[in-house]
Amino acid sequence: MKETRIEIENKIEIAFLPKNIKREFTAGKTILQYASEANIAIDGNCAGAGTCGKCKVRILEGNDGVPDAEERTKLSERELKDGWRLACRFKPQTDIAVEVPVTEGASDRKTKLGGMQGSILPANIYRKEYISVDAASIANQVADLDRIAAACGLKDGCKADGGLMRKVPELLGMSSTLTVTIRENEIVDIESGDTRNHCFGIAVDIGTTTVVGLLWNLVTGECLGVKAVTNPQGVFGADVISRITYASEARENLKNIHDKIIECINGMITGFSESCGIRTENIYEITVAGNTTMSHLFLEVNPRQLAVSPFVPVFCSAAEGVAANLNIQANSRARYYLLPNIAGHVGSDITAGIVATDILEESEIRLMLDIGTNGEIVLSGKGRAFTCSTAAGPAFEGASIHQGMRAAAGAIEKVKIDEDVHVQVIDGTTPTGICGSGIIDAVAQMVSNGLVDKTGRFTKPEVLRLNHVSEKVASRFRKGERGVEFVLVYGDDGQDVVLLQKDVREVQLAKGAILAGIKILMNQLSVSADELDKIYIAGAFGNYIDIDSALTIDLLPDVKRDRIVSVGNAAGMGACMALLSTEKREEAERITLEIKHVELASCSEFQDEYLQAMKFKRGLI
Image (cartoon, rainbow, N blue to C red):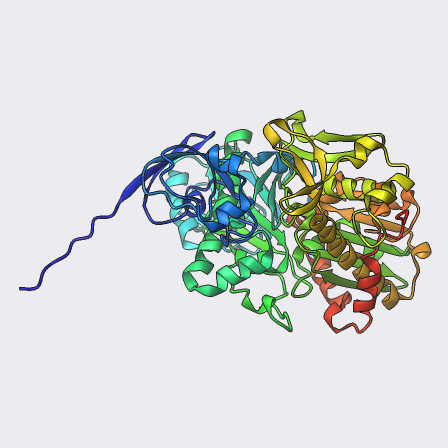
């Protein structure tokens, strides 16, 4: 007789603090995976490989596991003693309470750059009519829907789906006065009462790190609210390549990473409903912009081609359809419009940014930068326009920096060096790391004060004295576990914030790639830095970095300070314009045909430009 073996699943409860969210799970997964299932944001920059050390969490109760080799490498003895673990490595077998470092501050800063302020005149994609419908009679044997259309001034009749038709008898049975929502010649909603001012749309900018949503009244053109949240896909990796790899490994993975962004958008819709007092049934339109990978994942299209040469996307054209087909929780007839991409690594967010800044329509020579894990660049003038994408890497978002972090509470955001080092920390709390703007400041200050030479090397002690560096500053160089380090902040209990030689190299690689890309486009247009009339820096990064610091490390071409303008969330602005105007959608689609994409990998001069661009030309030595 064959023995029957029954396996009983081991259930564990995890409490995520400080939000105090408790969930029951089947044991066997990592805390990072459990957090993803519970929609708790934890940085998973290396996609769970255990190599970045960014997913630190503190086990407050029930720590039953022994740290593995990766954890012992990435965490200090003090951290391990205090209960810190890597969320991507620790697999709890019993109930635990885990403290997740708060990262919402980064999103809070992005809400300030949400998009257009005030109101603009919408282009009448939608209109709502409050009507009185004549009763049917022997003398007026006109179908209900046709009488409704006539009352709305639709002389040639209208289109409506079966679901809407099923609502008509009940609504007319209650009242002859209705509000009708019309999109072009199509009735998309019929409601009882006067709801003429209840017509909403949402513009969404899907960033690799942060997702921004803006709620608009489609009738009045008023922006009613802005929300920004950490992109929940970050659990699968900080950069697009990591997410492409994950999505391509299995069909289930692709659905999972797609569902994450849809859940994120639905969470925003729910938030708007609660904070602005609107009904989700009155949201009729969603426009979306994002890089090419985000665009593919939004539609659940496998982006595997974007990770291998020749980096050809599945689609570049604009996409539109019924939002409900993507499980977006709005009106059942709501539409989505995804702005067109330009190339494999120049996405609809750049198209939206071009629409928002109008740089292709200007006679001047203008440059636009959107700096993140990729650096997208647009240059226009002389009746032509070029664009390219550079693999800047995650240095400016903190992912590849030893103690780098997002722009959240506790992040050093500004650095000044004179007789000593002075820092400014987000929210004024105890510094725990350094974000992108702080990294650029720190390196720029070290370069201008002779602490880093033109090649990017830390300056030797004997040369520091020749550069008249103060003893306080010079003493901040020390030998650490990872080589020579420079102490930015002396922390309590030895929890110092330091900058490594490797961190400076990461900045060099990032800024070198961006400046080289700019130089290639300038060569294409045959212009010099002196001929650039304006440089637009888009996104949160551009708004918070110190422009003088960016010029000091040669992140930007050598132009006068007053020619550089931070334009905030240009992608969000462009998505808003597309939400409110069909003309702007047509403009976006026209842009993708007019602009020329330059593939840097095929440019023979890129390597030389890159090597030159890595240097700090303003260094003292």
